[in-house]
Amino acid sequence: MMKMEIETVVLERNKIDRSQFEEAAYILKALANEIRLCVVMQLTQSGEKSVTELMEQMDCEQSLLSHHLTDMRAKGILRCRKSGKNNFYSLSDNRFSNVLNCVMSCGQVNR
Image (cartoon, rainbow, N blue to C red; front, side):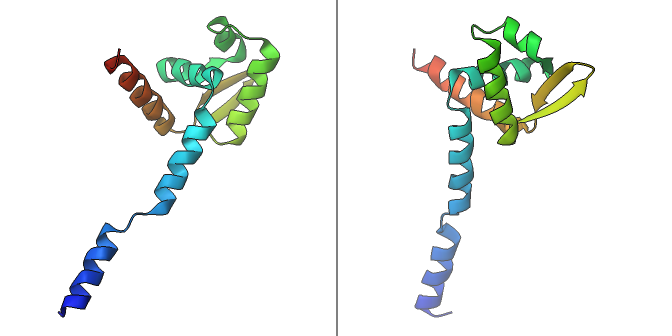
C-alpha cells in the first residue's frame, strides 16, 4: 500500500458518523422539558402507567400532561395502549431511560 492509500484508510476509520449526532440531538431535544423527563423517570421505574397514575406524581394540569404525552408519542418516545377509557403509556425504547439516567447521574456527581 502506498502512503496516500494508508492515509485514506485511516481517515475513513476515524470519520465521524454525523447520523449518530443527529439522532442524539433529536433525543435530547425531544426530552428537553421537566415534564417529559418526569414522565420518562416514572415509566423507567414502573414500565407502564395510565395518565391518572402519571398525574399523581406530577404538579401540572391534565391538559398540559396530555399535550406532552401526545407529542412524546408522535416523536416515538412513548407507546400507548388503550384499555377501556384509559390510556396506558410506556417507553418505546430503553435509550430514553439511558439518557435520563446518564443526565441524572452527572448532576448528582457535581453537587
